[in-house]
Length: 212
Image 1 (cartoon, rainbow, N blue to C red):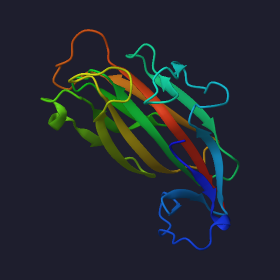
Image 2 (image 1 turned 45 degrees about the vertical axis):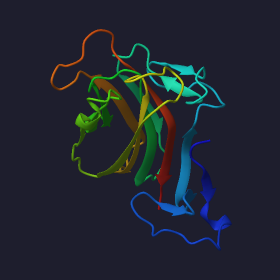
Image 3 (image 1 turned 135 degrees about the vertical axis):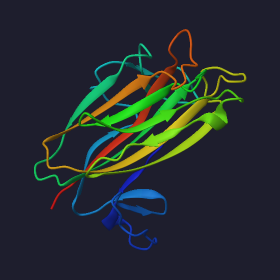
Image 4 (image 1 turned 90 degrees about the horizontal axis):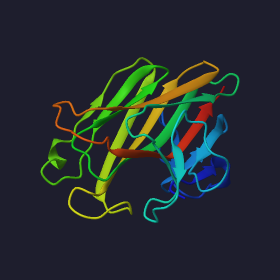
């Protein structure tokens, strides 16, 4: 399980990082405070299929484990997540995984219809350095992300056929009754890509609501 969640009151001896917009971590683990409620914890290893507008569960690759695979790869996916009453802030984390051969095609992440992040991907040796991340400022949203890879995670092996993982964490100030997440594939900015759209997936989606 890629992300562990603990109730803060259960751990008293371990040092805690200061509370930020993203909550508290104790010994590297995400801790829930008294005003935080776990809305969604989805690593796809168990439970019913998630409510994305498209895609399918895929657990055929040992290196990746169970993921939510976009099908077709050029179709956007959207999801609405109900929030508890009196929610003042939501903390959302997820992994976006670029699978096999990307030539700087991009994924765009939107919150409630507004784009907040665009990331281009490639595991091709001559394009890795050209990967680009664009964070789009939106009122009430704080975002941080980390790009990992390329790594051999199971789909294919060989130069340019590795997987790259973008881990995203967002703190979203909202009093709305639901949260809408959308992920849209975009072509490479310079029009470099040709042929079939590349494959991508979502993993480890966690949503935490902060109430008074």
